[in-house]
Length: 99
Image (cartoon, rainbow, N blue to C red; front, side):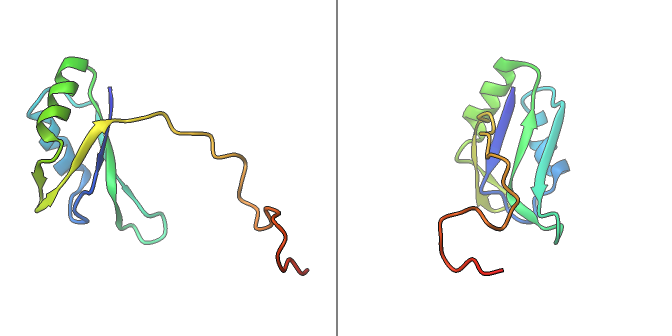
């Protein structure tokens, strides 16, 4: 099961997240998401646990708990929505698009 953890301290590292969730069972992966340019934590991450019952127990116990001085939010990760093929600077909408 893929788990979303939010409101993490900017000091929380992937290993800290893994260790926290391993108290409830096997963790396949644990990643704190970082900004590509600065390398600084974005304050959220994802944990993968292969056993659904262990994952659900971790979610129940860790949601609204404290980690590194912050009250965190833990829930089942939702599939990422397709954000389209963006990337261009001119997405329409009028305005002052001068070339």
